[in-house]
View 1 (cartoon, one colour):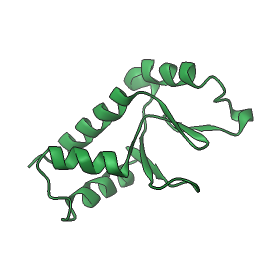
View 2: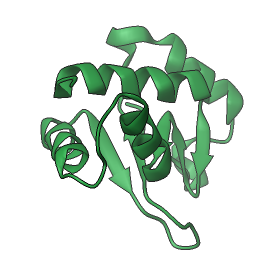
View 3: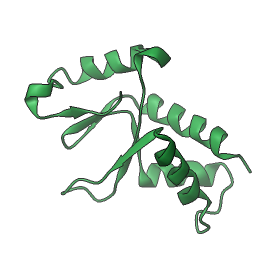
View 4: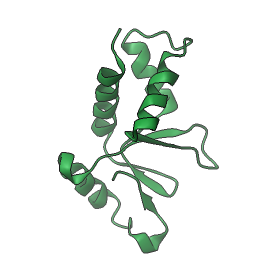
Length: 112
């Protein structure tokens, strides 16, 4: 079994591989609850046990992810918070993909 830190790294990498995506009025690098569950299954976890929820809870508490559920969507998503100090190219990719992500547009970019 992989520990929380390792699973966080794998989940964040998977979110970055998918690229920046928009979710309602937010955009950034995220995994849906279903995508997160699939990742945990692929890594040998039994998702009927509380481990996945515990790991996600730790990531939330540490400020590594931001989970939201918007009206009109079936499941919540887990945004991975990225900053320029870590690797600015990811933020710039999101800005290029969604050029309307300005504070005056009412769209919130959650990757930093």
